[in-house]
Image 1 (cartoon, helix red, strand yellow):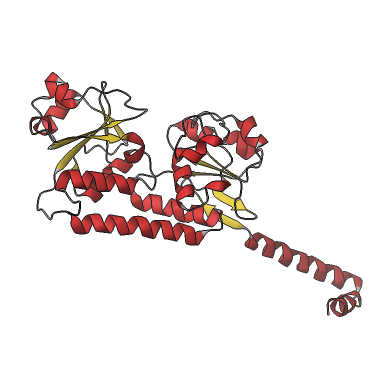
Image 2 (tube, helix red, strand yellow):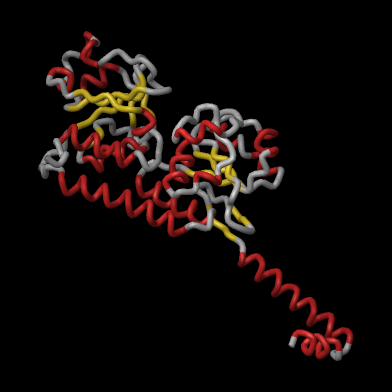
Length: 308
């Protein structure tokens, strides 16, 4: 059949044949473009792949957790120096830090996709030498579960595994719904203060994933500033006087003094009533699947939601 069509084309006069040939070429190229994979990241950049990503470099630990939760951990080919979870990730070569990755090391790994999480301006700058070399890069900004689910769906597209993305989202939503079902119903929501760092006190603001964790757990963030991280004076902390005090331990807060051992904190309601919770920074402050666990932990602290 192909030969018959070719002979028919060859019988067309020269100029008409050329026009017809170029038309076919344009249609063919358009079809090839449509056959590719594309998403728009959270900064308006179109990310185009010719085929699902098989060699991925993630410049932030959230992506490692998500890809492993989607059973796609074997597609990761590197890690940053700070990445130690899941444990399997430690076997991969390190390519520098989240803000200062080594572009030569990344290029040598021949990735077909690089993932970055927005933070300081260096996060975006770190992608420039990679994009210059033609490596597709996607950058995301996550401050809520809805934004996280949107990111997971797009990772499903980029990896050619939308079903795995939908399955992960459904699993997370089911656990969030269970927390909502189990927690106490109250007209007044318990106020929560989340300490990011002490001393030089930093708190989680309304623009953080922690804020959405508090909301899903049934509390209210008593820090009303819209920023992700808010510098707090201790006088302001005394003024807002939270009912519950949560403080994290991790890279941002490696060895904090316990709040009830800070003499000037003893007037805070949360400290006086011993409503203090110590949590893991990577579970609460890093956007990822374990944020559902953070909701469960906090809801149980606030309402004792664990099933008997």
